[in-house]
Image (cartoon, one colour):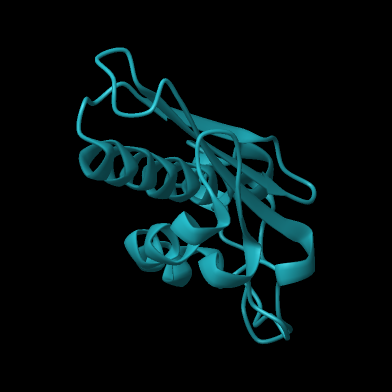
Amino acid sequence: MSAVANPATVAECLRVGAGFSQGDRAWIAEQFATLDARLAGFHADATELEVSVKDRETKGQKVTLECWIAGRQKIVTTSTEEDLHAALNDVRDDLRRRLNDAKTRQEPRNNKHLRDIQPPQTADTEPVRADAETA
């Protein structure tokens, strides 16, 4: 991936949704700071994160983290952990895993279209033939 002029960071891209106040934003951004390294490959103006919680601090609590990156499908991670801190860590770790999986799918060894493209031949090398008759 090429270097990005304005890399995305959690502090810049995070919005707090239902169940959280703007006062919660700073400590949530601190919890999600480990995502910065993974988000750095994307442009800040094309990346959005939104975290929300339903039924906060109750037995049926559900934390949702949504990630939008231009040109990619939206990623949604959820957690039903009863402890809010644990739930935030759970959705953070799941998002990191999904971003890594998406990156891996785009690498040539996992992308048949990219893998099948042969590197160009140079004038000083002969093309290698793999015919059974000549081998």
